[in-house]
Length: 266
Image (cartoon, rainbow, N blue to C red; front, side, top):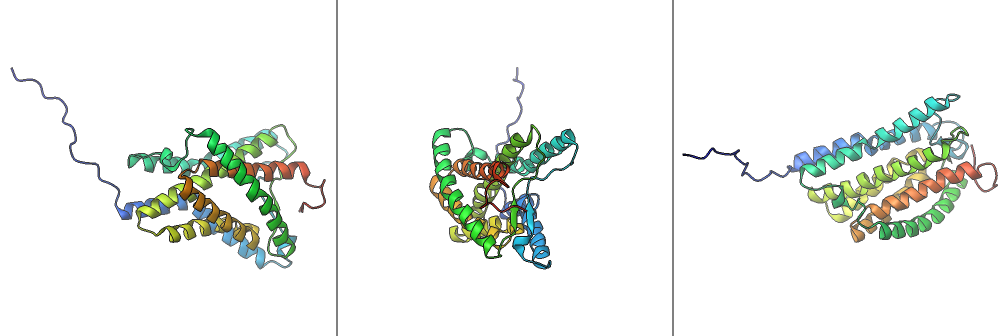
């Protein structure tokens, strides 16, 4: 008696995405995330430089209230914005899984928590101290708007939302602009130097709404982050560093604004 045949396995090897597919996917991810933010920042910058008065007399506000006077509705909008901003990261994870990889291949996992935390903390301390000095100098020279990191109402969820917003920024930017973008550009045949320039200029571009100082400062930070990623092969420390930097900026501003003379306010 002839045995019943089982399901036929697909013996053909998985086809790797073509160069055109990789290119289109990369452009799609950027168009849904930080590439779109770069265009928005450029339009905002053009509006600022063509507006009467200097840049430092204008303000760039982050983490503003979405429903003034309605704290629960405001909280819902804040959490919605944080969650939807991370959808492009989920899209990146999907594209990586399709080619047999994962976010772990970018060094975004929990396999090395202590080294990631230590490296990230040191990096944040170095960049944070120089970053504040550079921002104050750029604003004093009229090359930067007054950055207002938060303008949330004084409610119980203010600080948790600021921390969540900082972590969301860190995950989105480092996974996409460093890990994913460099991986894709390498696959597309870009040289390491050209990929470094592309990643760094992109990072500076979506901070252009802050002014020339925001663009230059973040572009330099992008160069440092790319070089460290090439060395460590992990975005984990970069996410930690970026989280600490933004938490310091958001929470620090909330605590110090109007109480210390050296911190500009709108």
